[in-house]
Image 1 (cartoon, one colour):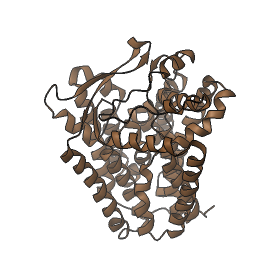
Image 2 (cartoon, one colour):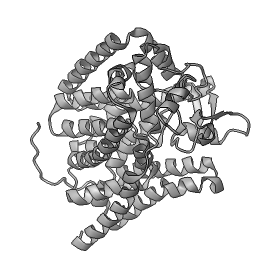
Image 3 (cartoon, rainbow, N blue to C red):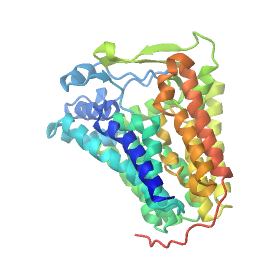
Image 4 (tube, rainbow, N blue to C red):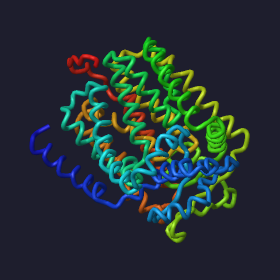
Amino acid sequence: MRRNHILLLAVIVLALVVPFLTAEKASEDLLALWLAAMSLSQGTPELVYSSGAVPFTMQPPEAWIPLAEGLGHEGNIFPYLYPPLWAALFAPLTGMVSFATLEIAASLINPLLLLATSWLAWRATRSRLPCVVFLLIGQGLFYATLVGGIAILQNQPQILVACLTVLAVERGRSGAQITAGAVLALAAAIKLYPLLFVPILLARGQYRGVVSLLLIGGALGLGSVALAGWPLHAEFLEGVAAISATAIRIPANFGVDALVTSLLPPGSMQAVQAVSFPQSAGSNWFVMAKPDGWLLAGRGGILLVVLALPLVAARLPEARVCDTLWPVALIIVAMLSPLAWCYYYIAPLAFAPDLVARMGARRGGVLLLGIALAMSRLALMAGPHIGANAVSALAVAAMLTLLAGFVLAPHPEPAGVSRAPT
C-alpha cells in the first residue's frame, strides 16, 4: 500500500475514532458493576443480582434506582451479569474513589485495549499486512460498527474479555502455553464462554496451557467463593440459567435467537420497558421464555461446536488455526449465545484485516467495507424504517459473510517472522 493511501486511511480512521473518544459515555454496563459492588460494600448482597426468574427481563433491582440517581447517572440501568468475584473486588473501591473516576479510567483504558486487540491479532495471524495498516483497518472496523462503538460508549467489560482471548491465541501460537492458559482463565472468570475453546488447546497439544487454565481458573473460583460466599454464586448461576432460557429481541442482539424471534407472530413476546433515570430516557425490548425444543436445540448447537472444534483443530496447520479456526469459532459461539450482543464480535472482528492480505486489497477491502456498513450506526438509524428485526438480520448476515471470508480466503505462506515466547 502506498504512503498516500496509508495517510488517507489514517485520516478516515481518525475521523471515526475521535467522536467516540470525545463523546460523553453512557457507561451503563460499567455502572452495573459499580452498583453491585456498592451493594456488597453496604451489606446488602441480596441486591447484587436480579431475580433469576424466566423469562429474564434484563431489569435491575429496584433499589438500584436511587443509587444510580445519587451518582448522577442518566440513562438505562442494567443488572449485574458477571461472577461475584468482580463485585467483591470492586466493593472496597466504592468507598475510596467515585464512579466518575472509574468511568474516566475506563474511558482511557478501553480504547487502548481495542488497539492492543488489533495488534495481538496481527501477531497471531502473522499477517503480511504491515502492522500500521493492520491496526488502522482494525480500528476502523471497530469504530465504524456497533461492535466497537457501543462497547466504547458503554465502557463494556467485554472489551477486556476480547483482548484477553486474542492474547491467549497469540501466546499459544508463540509457544507460551502457560501464559495462554492463564489469560484464557482470566477471560473466563469475567465471561464464562471462553471455556468453550479449551478443546482447541487440547487438540493442538497445548497441555501445559490447559493445566495453567485449570490451576488459574480454579484459584480464581476458590478466591471468588472465599470473598463473596457461595450463596451469591448460586444466584449468579441461577441468573445464567435464566438468560439461557430466555429469548430477547433487541436491535443490538446479533445472534441466532434474535433471528428466530423475528419470525414469531406479533404479540408472542412480552414488552419490557427499561429501568432508567429519568424514566423517559429508557428504551424497550421484548422477551419470552424459550420452549423446551428451542432450548434443547440451542444447547445441542453449542455441544456440536465443542465436539467439532478439536476435530477441526487437529487437522489444520498452525497458521490456519490462528487465521481461520479461531475467528470462525469465536463468531459461531457468539451467534449461538442467548444474548449475542454486538460487542461479542470484537475478538473475531480483530482478525478481519488479515483478509485484505489474503484476498487482495480490492476484494478484501470491498468485503470489509460491506460488513462495516451492515453493522454500522447507519443501519441502526435505519431501524425505524426497515424494522428493528432487519438490523439484527443485517448484522448476522455480515458476520456470516465474514465467517465465509475466513474459510474461503486463500492461505499464503505466512511471513517468516520469528517471535520468541515471553
